Amino acid sequence: MSLYIILMGVQGAGKGEQARFIQETYGIPQVSTGDLFRAMKTRTDPLAQRIQQIMAEGKLIDDDTTNAVVEDRLGQEDAKNGVILDGYPRTPAQAAWLDQYLEKHGAHVNAVLLLELDLYTAFKRSFGRVKSDDTGKTHNIYFNDEEIAEWKFVDHPQNEFPPRLQAVDANGNVLSRRPDDASAHAILKRIDTFRETTAPLITYYEQKRPGLLVRINADQSIEAVASAIKEAVDARK
Ligand code: AMP
Image (cartoon, rainbow, N blue to C red):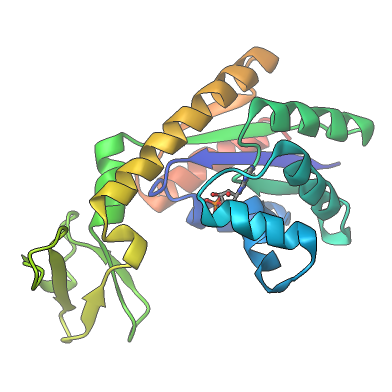
């Protein structure tokens, strides 16, 4: 028996954490097309170079190329009992290709899990996220995190936007932001892009089969989200 799960959610919805949970619970690997494309960075063949160029421009890779990369990954030994798809499909054409590919192999998409989060919370989860390089722990200035001893915004020396965020944990370890979380504009752009690309996919899967798409409230503890996911997947195995 195989298990194909599609995981969708805006940045900050906790997709990475939940993908790990699904992987451990059901023993299927996570397949992220973004990771697969990034892994081609060191390759110098024409296909890899074309992909690097498109990614650098922040655009989507064309459907045929993306589907070919996914086909290659799904054919590998560790993926024979199914996978968790992350970042794929991104277009209805990719979704349709996946359906016909799985059908040919006697399988189907079991569940499309949409981790729902209001967009202001999604914004705060990214913009307020800080991490200690010493402990590896992640914190957030917006969510009453008692392990953050102090945080403040300080003006950039040349008054550029956004201001810098300075934070330390209770042991004096410096907490810093990921560079891509520091730009409010870039976060909003990613959220907008997510909304635009996901809307047609939601329609696609809702029309495909009732109950295939499951909306999960991502504004809960990691454990509560994981348990909602388990319930949804167990009912669709
Ligand atoms: P991600 O890490 O999922 O945000 O993906 C990083 C980049 O890889 C995207 O900006 C696209 O250029 C490319 N990419 C990832 N997944 C897909 C996909 N399903 N279709 C087209 N392009 C993709």
